[in-house]
Length: 106
Image 1 (cartoon, rainbow, N blue to C red):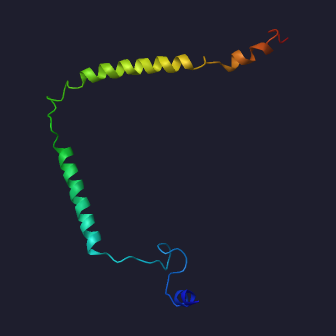
Image 2 (image 1 turned 180 degrees about the vertical axis):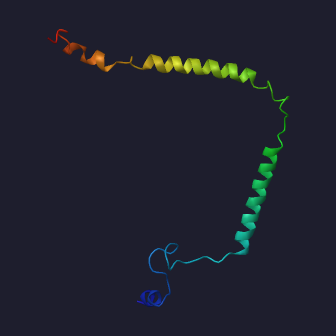
């Protein structure tokens, strides 16, 4: 009974709380502002690292040649594996070939 009376006089927003014309708008807190500033600073640090790479173009020219050989070998092996498991391609012409009796249309 007491909970019903408390809820009856409670001022709330009709419908969904955070959508619509009469929505509840959260006030901006100091903690939220600090979190947003930290997030912007973190993104700026990441962008700085991306703008100034560790290696120059000349230094990074051939460092991945050995990796490409290994990747090509693995790709060939996986292609062979998948092709051996797959059924051969069948065209519609091969499927309907049994319906051909004679070619004479006249």
